[in-house]
Image 1 (tube, rainbow, N blue to C red):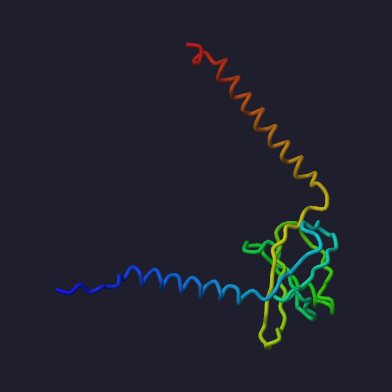
Image 2 (tube, helix red, strand yellow):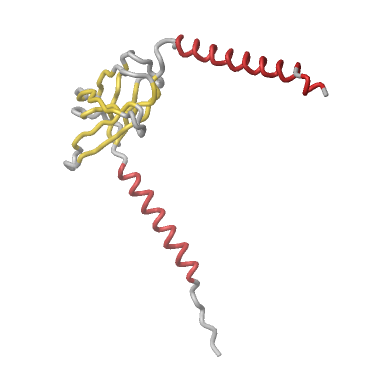
Length: 162
């Protein structure tokens, strides 16, 4: 009787999975058209920031249409048009609100296809929000005083002493 080498189906499945994974990696890289870079990592609310758009060869992109989405993915998300990048690929942007924002740049690439690049940025408050701090202190005091009052009443009750 001859032994025939039978190829395992598991071997083909793992090879097929590896090929699919490599294909997804190349497809993901192909979808990255460039980068959006800010001159400050954490800009402040109402503070002007320079935004630079670069293609995948790290060259500045002139004429890129730029927009910003404040609080992306939330129910209160809204998008504003920033403008168009200049010949140096830069555009000045002043954040309208503090919080998370996504800056998106769209342009026509060399193969006449629309290319897009985006980045998420955390916009800080320009100054410390005093009203928020006061509300937190008052809420903490109410909690502590309420808890202390209840504890005092429980410890002084005649049922507790028995």
